[in-house]
Image (cartoon, rainbow, N blue to C red; front, side, top):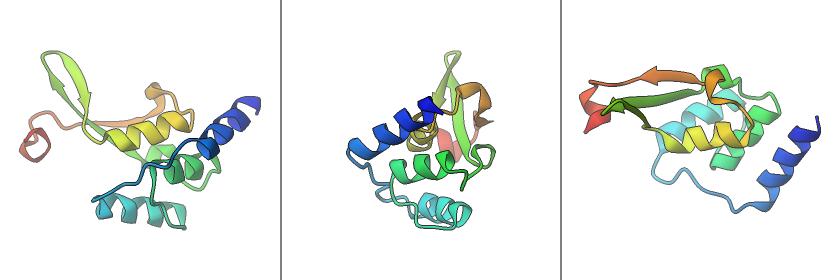
Length: 102
C-alpha cells in the first residue's frame, strides 16, 4: 500500500501530459473508466483506483532488428506510472501491420 501512495503522490506533482490529437484513445479509456480520461496521468490514476483493468489496456509493439518497439508509448507510460510491471501488460505484437509500421 505504501508503494501505491507513492505512485499517487507522483501523479499529483508531475505535469500533466495530454493525449493530444488522440481522440480515439481518449474515447476508449474514458469508456473503460466511466469518467473523462484526457491525460496519461488520468489513465494511470484510473488504473490505480481500479476503474480500468490494466488487462483491458493494450500496448502495441513491433519487432525491428530483434528489438521490440512500443507503438503506443503514452499508454505504456500510464501503465508504468500505475506500477503495472511489463510482464503483466496486455501486449499485442503488430509486426507486419502496415498501418502500425508506417
